[in-house]
Length: 310
Length: 248
Ligand SMILES: [Zn+2]
Image (tube, helix red, strand yellow):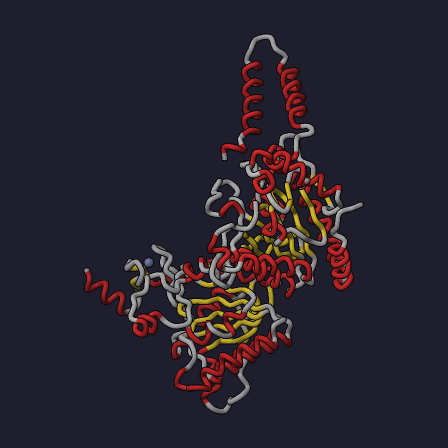
């Protein structure tokens, strides 16, 4: 993932510089550290939307497994779509949120400590991944357990086989299922959230989104290719798409914006995940106390109102 | 030496693992829940042993089939399936365990009746239902009536669909059991290396004149193909079941 290494390069260069200066005689190490910190913050302040996209895809960004292990207890993964496959791009199962039994479903870009993107095809789901989602949603509905989703995908898997096996149909099923499910849903947008593949898991009664996550109908590169004929205008495309956490929070689509530390979530994953965790707990407790018919009525109204403000 | 072994195997003190051919002291094997300590092969075990392995000690209380009490048929159904109430890790459930060694765990009219009874008991007592399966399928000797038990048990599952249900597939579960109520559970678990399917490999090979790969219908293959939630090692089965019961 060479193209994503820009931020690593900056951070590594600063670290090296700081270390080598600190080894010189007669320098004030604290002063050097303070200046480096200040400089770093300046670099990252007001970073462009395109930079957010890059941070959303950063190789060290916390992923699904990091959230699951930090937020829930006794997670039991449930495999398979019960039709033909166990898609590795979607992971789901049963877990406990404190004392509340819940269902967790998310895109898995890679496992926590292994950068095995290939096995999980970068979190891009096959129809079987969507059928797995469907059956987990049905399970949640039967037992009236809250659903917590984690979205981190460039989009659905663009393979001919996926088309033959009903990619469009399977995504439609998920979207309709979440819209109508008779149990509360909290969606967390933690990284990339591209297109219908993201929407399959990307809506809920409450939506939590990270500052540098990017949620839109298409990737900036895809937009640039379609509109300008190549990917060179991806930065402009990112500004047109307005898909960062801040953008969606401003539009009222997202309920809670999780700010990221300077340089992106991977610089302090613990704090970021703790904040996501706190909000999930807050929202789940709020939603389980609501009358179910009322919850569905409010959700339907919320969906109805998903049009641009003024 | 081999003669000594033969004698030891014959009187049951030693057991040969059918998977890795290691000779194991039977008592050791028993202590290891009949799992080969060398290759993790899961030996087929009886219903009584399974109940001892998963239930809290002394908690299993049999549920009896009332119909046909007078004749031997009701008793026969209870040989194929051990049904009762129990606690697992402190959680109450209704449990059915199939006995493959008795007529291949086959499902005839009375077994169908018994399974339906367990479903209803679970619903009445608001308890989850766990069925540990091992079956060659429908009892073909009962002809159409055997076959129709697939419909009757499936229909009963529909009628009791609010009951949380777990199926544990053990080696082997094929035919009419895997293709009816067993697959209609909320959670589908299997032991490692269990053969689970509809048509058995011999039927397919002889009908289709083909050769099948050795892992055909293995639980590992089924997991990859999306049909199972999890494969659970026998050592973890009790813990796993109690976790599900706690979640329900
Ligand atoms: Zn062995």
